[in-house]
Image (cartoon, rainbow, N blue to C red; front, side, top):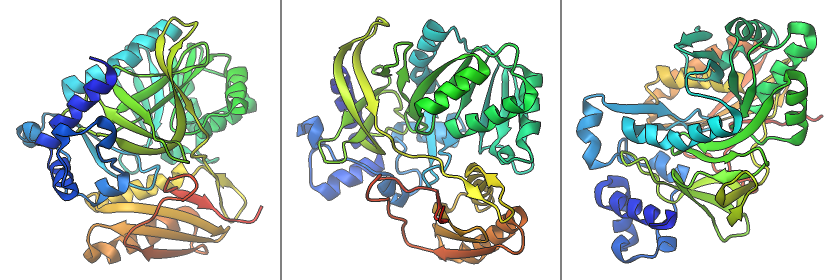
Amino acid sequence: MNTKEKALQVAKEAYTLVPFYMGLEEAEKSDITNMQFEDIPIITKEMIGQAQERSLLSSRYIMADLTGKLVKTRTSGTTGRFSEICWDRADNNRSLTTLWIYRKKYYGVKPDDKMCFFTLDLPKGKRYLEEKNKLIISRETLCESVIEEAYQKILDFDPVWMILQPSIAILLCECVKKGYGIPDSLSYIEFTGETLTKEVRNRVEQLFGCITADQYGTKEVNSIAYECPEGKMHCMEANVFLEELENENQELCVTTLQNHAMPYVRFRLGDRGRVIHHVECKCGRKGDVLELYPGRTNDWGILPDGTKVNPYMFLQRMTYINRECDQMLLQYQIIQQETDRFLVRVVVEEDEIQDLVRQMIKKEFGEFLGEKVQIDIHFEHMIQPDQTTGKTLPFINRIQR
């Protein structure tokens, strides 16, 4: 059975057991059992955001959900939308197996090696967490006044490898340039989450003196493509079926082959690219290769005193607010209009919490940006994706530069 046939099998299971897909099949007046894979409806983040809670959960896993046996995570909100992802633990482990096999084969990285990454998921006020062989750092540290402290923590922890967004890697490069040195054991950095340019990669490799690779994935399906030492992004065909849609935007669409608890079938990623089939690579792999076109870039915010701040500083605060509001923020977008004026667009699940959300945004952003900064808050029914990129960018800087 090839990858496409496996994806069709997952689709038939989803349209039989998952309320979201069953409702979609009814609304479309279609019969999935008699469809070609290309005729199955494409789902979007907007459709998922409007779906009822837990409607994407397979009926086979309801008891596992009620008894706390599923692995749960949330999307980071980097597209301006929060959603919870559920995995059966065994499926999640199988989903990551191929990635770990190639991390070790290509770059000598093993699951028990000490590693470091930045996250939005730490509780408010907690900047660092050491967990077994991991140093987890809050993205709250991504500003000039705190990043050097965070980097010192990395040096003390001495990881073998790190997972970094390119914009975070640039911040750490500045610490190296200031004379902080590099971790003694560091041999590998994996990029993810943002478009990686040659300039950023070269700068990181030169300053840290280590090997780097790019990895493309989402929390909905885990790893989608991984870069080999020859520079090719090999599709993770044991984990996903990746399509390039035949439209002018060349959008990418993914179907999980492993997540049976919350299957994503023909899920439009909002990224653009080209899938090249049947590639024989010098690294020894044969199969599909992804050419990912430049998509989301990470713009910087500017404080009234001229200090540049990583957009994750804003995302971190929206994550705190969403957590305090029982995950009832469906979408958000932060637009910097001037150095002292910000617009926060928000979509909430219930209008009754608008006053609470407004107060929390004013408080969180006021403490961060200062009392003189004007914060306008607009509650909206939906935030539409950008027509050019297909993404709902979480942060936009519109200051004239």
